[in-house]
Amino acid sequence: MSNVATIPHSAVGEWKQPSKGVVGMACLIIAEASIFIIFIVAYLYYAGKSLSGPTPHEVLELPIFTSICLISSSITVHFAGSALHHGKRNATSLWLALTVLLGGIFLVGTGQEWYQLIYHDGLTISTNLFGTTFYSLVGLHASHVIVGLIMLSLSLIFSLTGQMTSAHSEKLEVLSLYWHFVDAVWIVVFLVVYVFCR
Image (tube, rainbow, N blue to C red; front, side):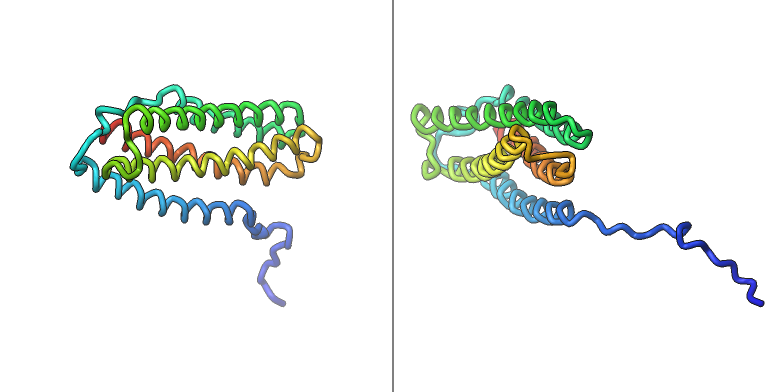
């Protein structure tokens, strides 16, 4: 007679496959982070090496208000995901609308900054090394904000029309991971471009 105890099947923890969406987004974020690192290193390498003006100190102003708006949108998108998880469609729509609004304010602020730099300060992408690296890095981030806003706007439309339910909460969570990444990257870009190398 065997003395080996039999462990009930229910007592053995079953391995749960991770969400394909989360894993896919994590891989995308790692790849995108690598691209941003390359652009940030290039900006740091060429900082102060422009042979002609204008220089960052002469033309750049701290975009504090728009930065606060973008970073705050990470909070609102989190609340949107939480509301959807609990089946609160109206609250989900409200938080998504606030997220889109905050992201839109940031994008409009970036556009106004670029208009000022190009038409009043004479800084274009071909003016000097600063112009080339500045527009490349900030433009790369702005393009990610645009993509995020498009996806968030679609989510808002689906929420308003009742096509997004708590069953889609994981998809909104995946989208929120992308948006958190965009916000986190901006903190690094803000510090590098507007604080350390200004």
